[in-house]
Length: 247
Length: 210
Image (cartoon, rainbow over all chains, first blue to last red; front, top):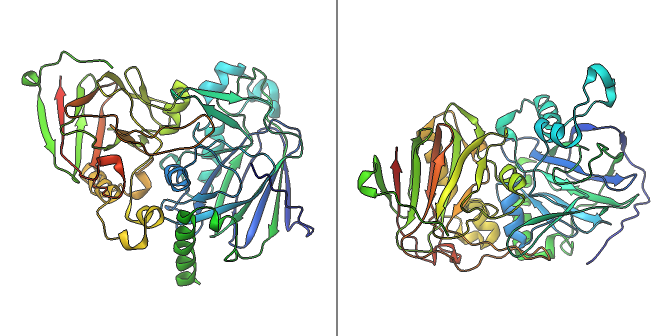
């Protein structure tokens, strides 16, 4: 497995430290890279991605998997949209395996697994769930339940046996592990740090995560992500045609 | 493998979906839907919606998460993205069905095969017609990752995903009971570029009992 650590010397354009069940959404334009860093170890970051200009174009789980013949995400794979294009490329990754098939927690799962801690008694230490966090951030961009799609679960590893039974791999991500997403189109990013839905840890404990955004070079003809699969080369061409017609 | 004793002569509805065509139909709570792979190795790309709230639609990830397993077969309950139970598989002579592979589209065909394949008929075009038959207010936004009945997409323990030869054969079927009123949209897959339809799309039959 190639673990790529891109120690970018440049300064981040933007930095944000998420604590508790931290939520964030924003538009990151083409030519920028989002670095997510697991500060404590054992983080999970649920992520949804949409074309910022045409919000009906979004991350597509099946095309991402079948276009690259994979069941999980790592460098140098790419995140495909539902229009045959690349939304983002995984240009660096110290983790090596990120889940994208298990979805997100909801209120019922959180209450069953961790019990109930409400705002009235716990104030901002209350227990939140990933679906509600997604819906809260989506609403700020005019999106709602119709726009919920299978999400990324960055930093989490889930494996399948031959019969399709899934197992969560605990303690997968280590302190300071990070992943870089280089955006190939202007992208609405919606994320939260709620725990993975299959994490058997009985303790409610979303980990602190750092977000940084850097400027990045346009992908060259020799780019590792572009050339990782012939499918990705064709999807990059589709993306570049799209950006050319828009610019 | 679970067989059914339901008699097609007692059914309230019966229809053959021609190769490459869409189909849209409401299935009431308590009714049973059987999908029959008439000639074998034919992918039936399928979406389900809560009939009263199209935003409450079938979710592959919620279904996988709740059963802790990737493949669908007898005993699998299909969940919506809002956590509601839509249908349960009550009989299945095929043994396993895919919900990771999604549907083909003209755009994804350019990515997967070649730009020259863009003109070829694809499931998403059928799905768009199929959801419009449910409501003209619906569109691409409402087409989430689907079920591929009769399709075999094995995942290996080291995380590879492959499109294998079909596990289905002529006459194999799957049966689902509706746990609420649902609308079913099927694209009888027209794909000619991979083995999901054995390179020869064929008809499927849908049968409904009260």
